[in-house]
Image (cartoon, rainbow, N blue to C red; front, side, top):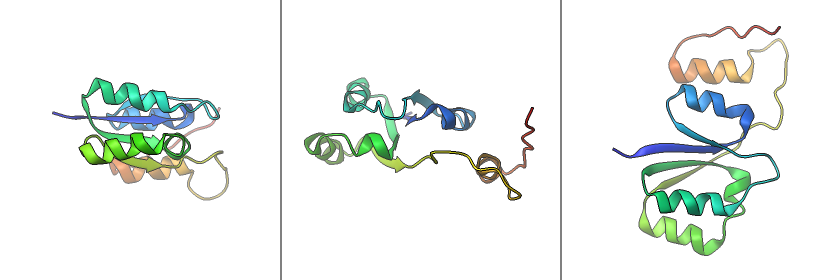
Length: 109
């Protein structure tokens, strides 16, 4: 069975791990197209969810090669640059509620 790999920033990695995906963390500003090439060589992932900042940096020929093969399927995501607090439900709590169908209260220390 194909696996899911998410290449994202550290502040959003935990949520994807909780959802059961394999996660590869990258730092903002240090995105490298070589990461995707290594994942392709591995060959065990059927779905590759990638931060928009990294996907924008991969060479056009590599992107064409991936799309031509049809595997892994590439999905672009954009994580928020900062988490905002306020009277509304925090973003991560809302995301968790939608994903697992259960409300989790996040308590700040």
